[in-house]
Length: 210
Image (cartoon, rainbow, N blue to C red):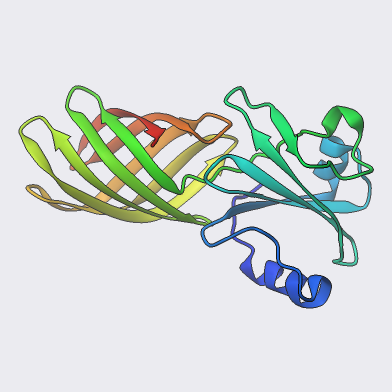
C-alpha cells in the first residue's frame, strides 16, 4: 500500500457524497487507500475500500467507501506506542469485533521533534509532510556547530520504515544534493530511529515529538 495524498479523491467525496459535511483531515494529512482485498482481510468487510488518514498526534481516521464511491461509515482510532488502537467514539458497524481497533499502516511525521544526532548534539526539528512530500527545518546545537538546517524531498514508506531523498542547505557546510534519511517509526508515530547522510558521511539519529 503506497503512502499518498488523495486530494482529488477527497474533493470528489466532499462534492458528491458529503454535501456540506467536512471530514476532519486538515492540511498535511497523510493517507493510504486500502484495497478491497486488504479491507476484507483486515476488517472482515466485503466490497469496501478504506481510506485511512493519520494526523500528527497518532489518530487515524478510517473512511469505509463502497464500490460506488459513496461513504459507508467514518470512525477514528488512536494509536498507542505498542501499535494497538483505541477506538475514538464509536466503531463502524460491520467491522468484525476483533478488528474494531485495527490500524492501517499510515504514518504522518508532521509536527515538532527533538532530534538527537549521535555523538554531536540535538536539533529542534519541524517536519511538514503532505502525502509523500516532506520538508524539514531545524535549529541545531551540534558540538562546535550551531545553526539552522533546511531540506526537502520525497518520503516513501514500507510498513513503518521509511526512506527519504532530497537536498539540504546546512550553514557552515553548504548545499547538499545527496541527502538521505532512513529510519523506522513507532506505530503511534511519536518516535523515530534512523540514519541521516550528507556529504558522504552517515550519522545515527533518534527523534521524539515535542
